[in-house]
Length: 173
Image 1 (cartoon, one colour):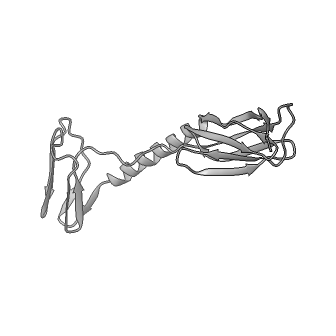
Image 2 (cartoon, rainbow, N blue to C red):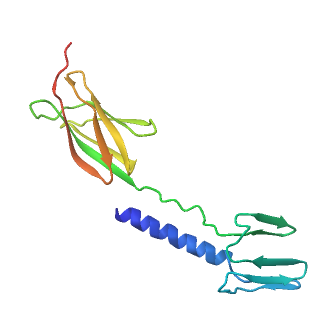
Image 3 (cartoon, helix red, strand yellow):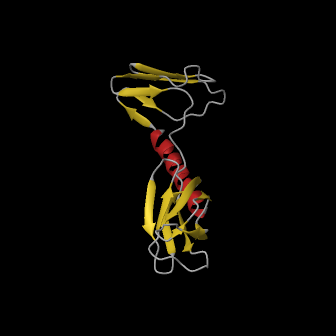
């Protein structure tokens, strides 16, 4: 959770600095643009061969005018700021019906996009998946020659540890 907040603060800071850099004073030739705050939202700036006029409500919001060495985008807009979900991890154990860890079982993790990852359990039945997008529900399923397992749904809002996947019965051969 702290990573998500930290990431959002960084993204917001970058957006503010980008807007600040974008709105710096520019001058050259026979014109000069100066920064001004007009309380009603209207104002005019002109010189040389161009003019820029702002109105309250920006009736032409979202339009772009271009020509020569400049372009103007009028209206209220926001840059593409979308939060990125931090990667979380999920770990646990695959257990036999009597509670022993199951070695070399294949654990599959399927996410909402259909992407499936696989890992094998260690000698005591432990498994781990890292860098999974937070905020989604994933399916954990286990395949073993010896035991049958029911797939589990896990809602990932943060790191999930100590997930036990316990076999309900041995496989029938």
